[in-house]
Image (cartoon, rainbow, N blue to C red; front, side, top):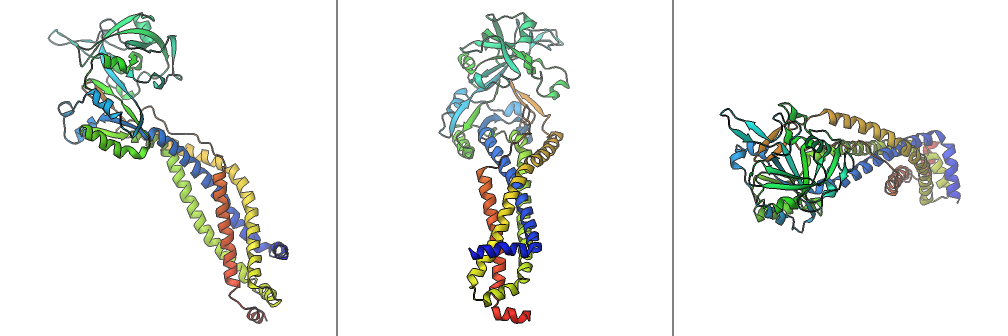
Length: 466
């Protein structure tokens, strides 16, 4: 008890020196609380997105890369059976799969919106003959609950969602344009496989507040009706399979295979290559989308961690130097205590106690102030990084290739936006880390003093004083 009381009194006797040590310690703790809170929160969000978006593997033919390799996408493109895509989904590395495929189509009964030739997908040729081309898009999916924008920008306004084979839903604009009501049957024909005719029963009509064209680049050369979201006819993937479609020729596929763990991607790719997937197909996550979504957060997390490391290193050096100078000035005090019979160990305990008390006081204040400062600082940093990300444009953003009914538009970032908000909280993990760092600073300060003082003998200290 005497050692503790003496240490507390010494804090007042050496107020100036201890105030300087406390100021440095507080600055280190405050900076660490802010940076560590930001780093941990941002890293946690990035990890969560990685488990979601980072586990979605797409298998698609890369036409842009084929062109870069000197291949002709129209000649060298390879088409594989749909049953192979289904076989891929049986992998033990997957937790589930979503099959989505779009079919470019035309109809002589359903007139497309934005079609300059009014309706059937016909195009007059110079020789007077007629050519059929796509004006509509048949969108198929194996999971209607995961259709994009439904529940936000799209809502069923009349009827219901499709459930059985050959049931479909269409937009209100397309329904009004063609005077189609729930219960009507519509017929459409695949543009790249004219023997594939779909007779669909309209069971639902949905409102649509999405942008008609996802990529403004599509409008530079005039309207492309088949790529307008107003001309989408949505049905089940089973409808496509039931029609007898054999390969992905004429399909714009988006089969998403969800890995049990993002680290399994190399194993999964080796497995599907073994089944027979051609080299012209990519097996990968949408890295461009992942980097766009997490880029600002990852950058902020990295910057916060780097700043924290720099502060800890420079702060530890500064704190050690100040402690060294402060304790050297107390040699006479230590010499008197030793001359009175106090053991080295008890002197060391007294010095360590002073360091711990200072550190605990700084910790209590630093946690409160740092917690209050972390959120506005994070918001300010993240806003700036999101603005920079929005200002940047990928050189692939406006690239587009259309081959055999398949489209490769942009770099895969369309529809994805950077995370622009983050909620910080001073959780138990952060507090524990801060306590350990504070304990390390206290030990550094105390050990520095102990190492200096205990190397002197009391008589030598007193003789140097005289």
